[in-house]
Amino acid sequence: MGDYMFPLERQKKILELLMIKKVIKITELTEELEVSVDTLRRDLNLLTEQGKIEKIYGGVKLVESTFGESSIDERMISHLKEKEMIAQKCSEFINDGDCIYIDSGSTTYQIAKYIKNKKNLTVVTNSIPVVNELLNSDVELVIIGGKVRKNEKSVVTYEYLFNFSELNILKAFICASGITIEKGISDYNLEEAITRKKMIELSKEIFVAADSTKFGKDVTIGIASLDKIDYMITDHNLPTHFVNQFKKTSTNLIISQN
Image 1 (cartoon, rainbow, N blue to C red):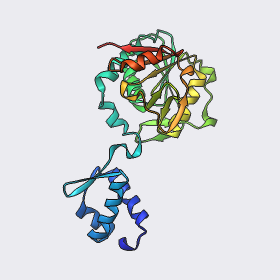
Image 2 (cartoon, rainbow, N blue to C red):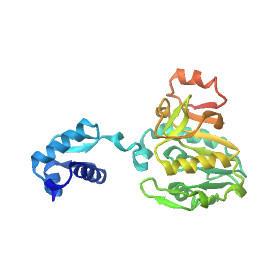
Image 3 (cartoon, helix red, strand yellow):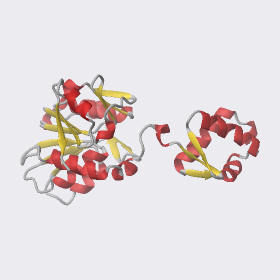
Image 4 (cartoon, helix red, strand yellow):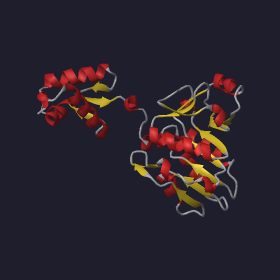
């Protein structure tokens, strides 16, 4: 089949295979695609030039940023110390009796670990790890219905499934993949962004929990401008110029300490 496929089709297939298996040998690819080594090399050279793949000894791997966000499993362990400190700081804003929303980000997930002993707390979430974390606690859990995004372990809801105005959410804890002063917060996935936007509308106070590496980035989909965000909670590695810029905004920047 291979040599007769359109080059674009073959290249798409190569990327799909690499998403499943992070590293693939050249020999595996020639067998899988049933193409000659010469044909394959042309495809690989093109994908390398486009910055989508990287050649490694005897094979190829995906360039991490090709598909925007890395998987939730990878993000759960990157900058873990910072995320835990941010989450601990967030938990200080959560009181007994609150009804809060925790979204499906890897930083907001950590919040669940610090709130198990709060009294009469209701947590609305679209994060399956948050639900798992709180299953054996006294926290009242409300999970948003909708489609499960398996790679994000989250549920993305559709407009018509939103009926949460009766829930009276006091505080929403939201993650972001990008934060800039000019554009506010942004994310990679449209469905996640829709859920986040909706929750920002429905909640009385908005907290964005994001480690310092997210600042200065403006990624694919805008979620909200800074004037919609009450508190921005990050770690102590945030460069000073961001701290100064935030002083001119209405958003409270809170830096979790070491």
